[in-house]
Image (cartoon, rainbow, N blue to C red; front, side, top):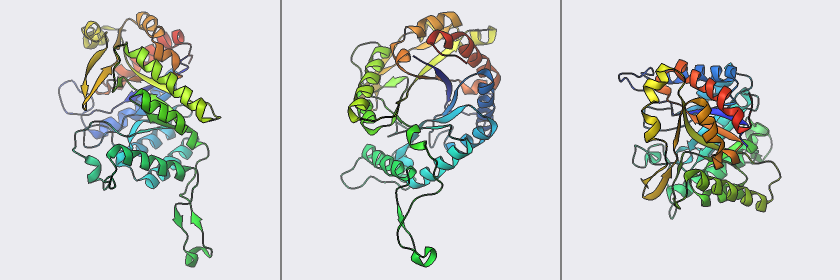
Length: 341
């Protein structure tokens, strides 16, 4: 049963007709303003998609820290950070510092990455897979090193000339509890099972890089079930969390009808196509009057199985329009899913 709802933004910016987000400054500042407004509306989270070499959000921690400083109850996080690009120890320091600023509200989503604009862009950041290792395995290795660092594992040797002792040093700062708020972005049932064995929370988006012929929500629900079974079998004792993403566009006035009214019919069904060489299923959009969206989402098997629903927002249309739509979703749709403000 969904009890939390938040927004997910890619932070697109481009100086094109109709865009209210013309440059990176607009994208960053408007994301902060939308997060502050989301908390006032009764939403529970603000999440950032991280992309490199694109006119989108790329460096999440300054933005997350700014959101943390302007809010008091809102969860903030990523969905997701591409671990192929990350120095695990630098990531551990940045994550811990941001979590401390937020007083323990950081929900950090990470993954092995997705198709991108750059060819092996992570190599430009200085990360090359080891011999016999592919980029996905490198991402998981970075993840393991990061997770060890945030629980205080010794990752360097102390210099007795400086410290007076010989021993191991952990990264600083440390933020207690952060380790249980790490999420893995999973695109298949198999990676969801791996996530469960690792004791990470599960993030599943509007895309699965596999297809069995069943509707998207049913395939994603099976993914969640397999994750929870793997979690239980591994013996983890803390409660796992699961989020799913959906494109939800309520028609609430003439402006939203102008932008989205014609899309309601075309985007009301799943789509199947090939992505990065794999047959993939893309979930439908939910577009229409709020009461109709509430009825349809209440029948979505994966939404029912998750505790958190992330709503992707068309950020280039500006804070005001997105705030009005998010307010309608919190007020008119969330109660039908079992949640409350």
